[in-house]
Length: 105
Image 1 (cartoon, one colour):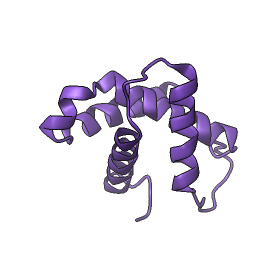
Image 2 (tube, one colour; image 1 turned 45 degrees about the vertical axis):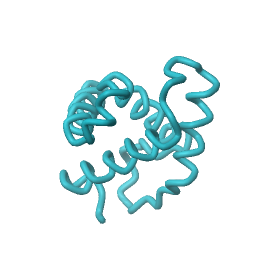
Image 3 (cartoon, rainbow, N blue to C red; image 1 turned 120 degrees about the horizontal axis):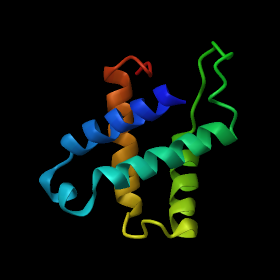
Image 4 (cartoon, one colour; image 1 turned 30 degrees about the horizontal axis):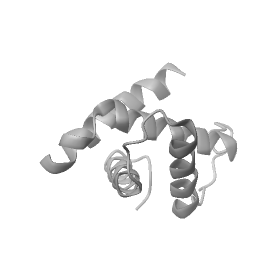
């Protein structure tokens, strides 16, 4: 959906802006966007993007992390993204989500 895409673009930009300079050298907004796309794939696969659901969802961060790392390896689109960077992006995405009321901390 347009809203979802818009949200991801904003999130990727925010995450990039909040990275340490060292990480900005090896990660682009596109890389972050790609990781966020894979995160959405995970949510979709788990049926978590269903708008009908109102209840709190427990998200297994370890599962998301492993899912994304495996796909990065498999798809080979951005093989330079390390597992540490995936974790960093997920942490920043969570921080952004809490800040914007997407998640309850």
